[in-house]
Amino acid sequence: RLKNVMWDSDVDFDLAAFHALVRALKRTLRQLVEASLAHVLLQDLSKVKILPAGFMSATPIKDQYPSTPAELPTFMLPRACMGILVKFFLEYQGKDLETFKTDVTKRFPCCVQPIDDLQLAFTFWGDVRRCVDTVAEQLGAEDLSEDM
Image (cartoon, rainbow, N blue to C red):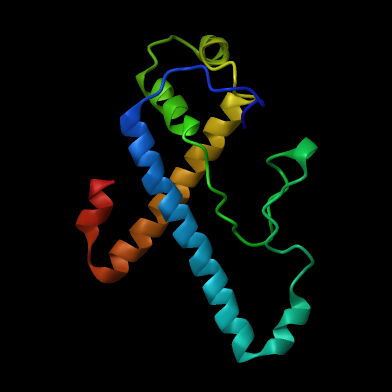
């Protein structure tokens, strides 16, 4: 999450290009979930009654973010700054976690909770890996999984 101020850190254009791919992936995943749900509901409209209110709401409770996810995956589109933050993490040469926390807060003052955001990014990456591994195994495309 970002503070409501202009981005005032480094910009990496390679990461911006990668970010465009992540946005396309997340948008596609959301459309796939919506289409799958529509397919199920069109087969039997009585199943609409079992859906909870706000089941695909993409807006969590702000004071409890990120602990209030939607019932179904919403695949919210991220901002490009997470790639810059992850790159900083991957290239970081510090000695311990406390120093990293201090350095990342100084380097990215526009981020509200950079450590929590990094943890979410790694969770997302783990989910993408799991999906790719599952699909690769079923299609016999293990080389795709190895490339990741």
